[in-house]
Image 1 (cartoon, rainbow, N blue to C red):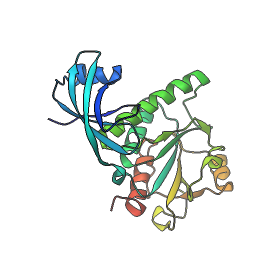
Image 2: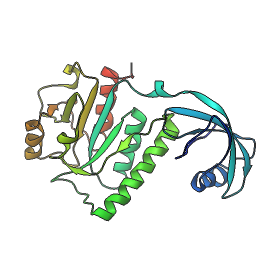
Image 3: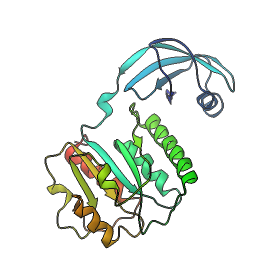
Length: 244
């Protein structure tokens, strides 16, 4: 039986009893149908996993016994720090992109809104979406074995995004660019802007380039908005990260 990994937003000790938060308790008891004595792994984003077993279990109350801190999970993080500026997309495409970017090792995701963005968020809906995307990130970390939680930043405009990037290299995908991703060298962190359905407008590309963002080409085909960030990050991880 697979040992479930559960994120807990609280301090974790090496040993002792802990009552799980209600959502985690419901997931274990109702969804996974686990029983007392079953093993599980807890993590809280500090880079470590904690082994535990279920001590007692009800629908809304689950007590677990921690039996020591497992090895550090820092080795599962890529040596390449990746920040993706991800243009808002329709429906489940945004969720899918965020989920897969986390699995691929991205450290930070900033949702972007621009002139061709179909999705528009008011302040209330933005807060709701950010909370939802944080949940998507947590689930992806539980599945992929990551113990450090990637950041989801506030939504910002494409023009504002370069000013928020502290990475060594700042890039944007452009099928017309003369430079390919294979030609990039000498960086340990990278920020990558990926456009919405229809791509960035010419003015937006010019604004990015004017702020020091380099346009790069990803192959000879035009990829969909949900495909491009995953392909680009895979290439970056292969050339400069831990996909070697």
